Length: 522
Image 1: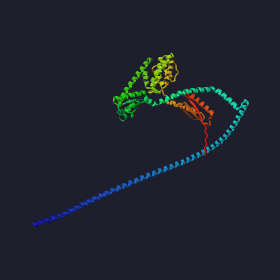
Image 2: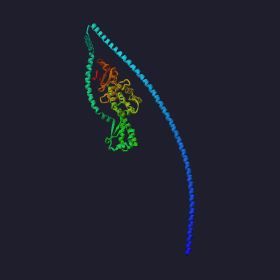
Image 3: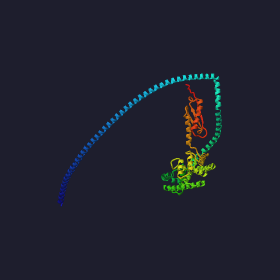
Image 4: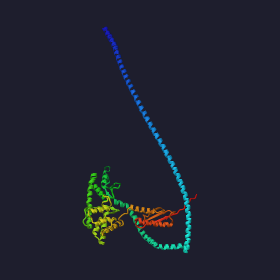
């Protein structure tokens, strides 16, 4: 049994040893295969690396060649630019040298010219002094001859001459005295008017605010946001459609509608009020309400025109003319309401025509239509005279009406009693104190014209219109104008102002001559 065990162990041991050597041999064979594969891969990688290196060297050579080419091109451009700049500098230097030479030549010529002029002036001055001396000698000789022939001395002749001048000037002196008496009377009236003007000027701002804006009351300030709308959409639609300015500020529970067009401002005010009452403020609703209000206003002005024509009892009139008469309520001229002015002219013209033996009905009709063109000036080009005559001709109005439209602004001669009455009534209505405001532009033009007339005379240094254009002060050169000539200059300026400028009242011309002697203590 033991032998069998030992034999089996020996066999097993031998088998293990044989298996170990066989396994080692197989393993060594596998390692050789792996090594061969690794060497093959390494060789392939090395070959690929060689190829990549060759490509890289080739690319580097191409880049180097391109860079060299660009460098050469840049170098050539830089050289060309440098040469061009050098040429430009050379040309500028040459041009400067030519300019310098020309300027030096001009300065030399001017210097020679000035020296020549100086010599001529010195020679002329000597000649003038000599002539002045001879002139004085001749004057003395003439005076001696006159004294000898007249049998009077110089002082006696001066007294006689002054007496004659005083006698001839007595009528002019009397005229001046009367003039200053009247001026004193007018000055008191002007002073009173000035006080009134100062008082009324304090209310000018309130007047403009009342006449050019409409105030719309709101129940609460939240409505301002709804009127403005998202991103200002509603207020843009309102201003674009209505043609007015809508002012929304910090004033509590109120907004302002501002426009010079009274008719458009009234429509805008009514439209916004209806939108606030309705509560639906949006672009589509705004347009709907605007169309509705516009139709209502058109009907209202037609009704008002019909009532006016019926009240004046001037006969049948075309509906379009009556509509235009109604629109005059929303038109103003120099602050005077056109409809109120038209009614004043119609009534006054009717009364005057009746007194002079004319047709009062025709005069009232002409007075009512004389400014009808003002209803069209906002929508049509041209002056209200031509527009009014055109619309009245279109609807076959009487020739007296057409003549009154043209004549009340001097475009035609007055051809009838009725037309003369309309022209007189128009002047009375416009000239009524407080009816109109003077345009600032015309006042400035008048003042400028007065100053220009005074400045154009020889010897005048400066001229200023003061006291609201009622006086002009003229500063003259004392070396050119003496005391006696200043009197004549004042008379000439006043005469020219009378001929060329339209002005109310009188304009005082004051010529101021001043001589100064200045010296410095050193």
